[in-house]
Image (cartoon, one colour):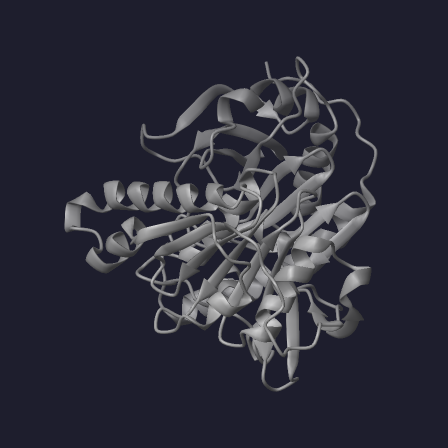
Length: 382
């Protein structure tokens, strides 16, 4: 007998998010069909999306043995083969059914499958195989949910559509590429550059790794052909690599060797985590545009002859948010100030900054605006 669900109060943001997200999925599927992509994921109606979001939200606020649940729900029918975990008795889509099973499906890449069973929404089991453009809802933390999809079965990268945090719904803006100076890390996170560098979204993976350690950190990306970045560093630099640490660069240069691709991608992920963890050391980590590590723990100073930075053009890839000049000191601390100053003095460089509170900012020089742009992209990294 299926577990019974208790009556849940309505989560108002669920209806708003469903109404805004569904047209996005409709557009994605039409585009995919025109390109001949098949098979494609089924598309839930707005009421179904709302019900899935509502159940996940209330589940996220519960605790099981002291732990908050982290689950991913995907709208798709049960698979015909034995490669999926399928329950003999489907679970009702309700917090009392979702929370106890959460520890079994918490590892990254496992999704609870949701489908209709006798006109009711139910969880039929779990799977790692998600078709392209499948509606996925992930519970990140209590009250924090993300609607996302995968561009293709061969890709492990999910593209975020909307972020729900409490009563706020942030719909990701899909046309940030039209913004002058929009860095490639933002394009990659938006899914506009799915291949990324060397067949992998390296800057995306580095960003995720920086954010994961929770200590905050800065990563500076400089030109391999220039040493001018040294003019913006306090000397001497304590942790200089000699020669540069080039494991990630070598992996990207050599690429996967056919059937060894899964192992190659695992090594690639390990290398990005290693570099990302270097940013937990006080000071900034410096890599070049070939992804070789040059130094870490560096202290940034204002380049000789350059004025102190006062304003940045703040952007966020959220619908309805308009880029606006802001006084940097009002929105950031010392780490952000130093990174923004670095880009202000070194126009051909990029700075990525992770805050301890989860915020993530990419600083880049915009020749069109003649000022530093600060792209707040934490909504893309969830």
